[in-house]
Length: 360
Image (cartoon, rainbow, N blue to C red):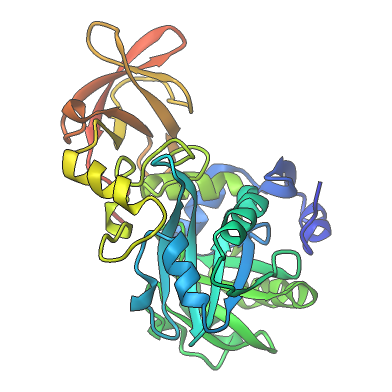
């Protein structure tokens, strides 16, 4: 099992450590509810250094990215990031990712930890044009400083005006006395904040200074359990749950990152699927009674017939109700539709709702 550069730090802080995507990661420190509320109301810091980073450079960089990704990366300008996915040839998704344009002919792809090897091999196979590729995953660390007080709490650490970095934009600048770090506003919590990309040798200094600068704002280290409840309240997809090799971006509600103005892997088949319409859709639902939906629980109709499956579920700390995501037939996908979740042999009524669950 791999460690991040901060593993010993988390253990010293009393974190509960779990294996996640091949890494030894902190799942919680004080408990999921406390950590969740800290991010929603103040500021918290996550170590998400398990994520993968690929550097794609050279005159063929954009051509390769356009071929393997669903979104239109030609629209990116320096300092802008884009959410996208890597389609496979079977109408499914290899992974979802964020593409950063660092400069002309220089892009950073940030991929999910569990898919680093798979994504690298997939992109390499399709690199017939000879773009230059480097896997930086083992050299770089990533901190996510999230919450409504993040900009104010961290401003003393940088000359960059944090409040001026808009969503899905980034700046390369100084942070915590380290030059040339990427300060990015591509958060996964719905409460604002920043991500800091730095070298493994720099991350401990940054972590310590972040906790010091944020102390008077109530900053706390946050584990992966709260990261999951925060993203789920926003209806953000998690790879391996809500999107997989078997789910189409159109079924998953990711039509907005699937641009048919260009050719990409499987674009023809996906365009046909768009034209014909999908038969199932990923929806959000709220449970009406006691019970918590979990991944792979059946979604049934009034007669008890299985019509779909839960992909993510939790008790929402912000809403104090059980929520989930799952795939259902198109006829059940409209907000207000009534479905039932099979929880321990009991059918519990649920209502399909418009995402996000948490309105902020």
